[in-house]
Length: 188
Image (cartoon, rainbow, N blue to C red; front, side, top):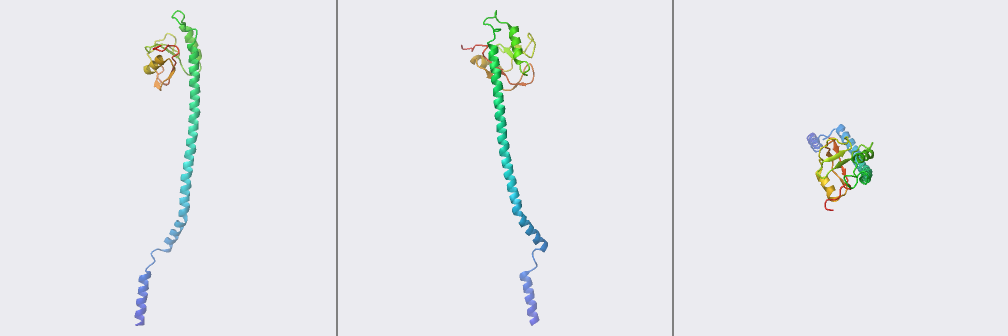
């Protein structure tokens, strides 16, 4: 009887305790994983934080570069407009057809854009080009392909900067500064 009780007690303890639900190697792995988890979370947080600060620094630097480019372009445009204003006051462009000297004016225009990688056009109200400094004087030239910009210049008498377009003569992307000082506004 004692033997039977002993046996039942052993069976009961085995049922209560059961087999270990996890082996020692699994327990060690779980402990190591749980010990490393905070370090992994911290590394992830620091990585994300570093990426955000890098992104902010890159964005700030891009804004600085954009500002410098804008200021440089503004300076170049102001210089080009000043040169065109000076050219428009040229004595070669007299008030009447008899005092106009197109050859001299063309030479002055070529001198103005020499080594700048730009060109100057003289355009009539209807869009036909009188000359283009990338072509010899007297060359046959197409009508301008920016009639809306040209109309604004003739209507206001003020310089206008066009959007980028493909030039009719050079066949490459261009932006054009059209100066209205040569022609009086239409409603004047």
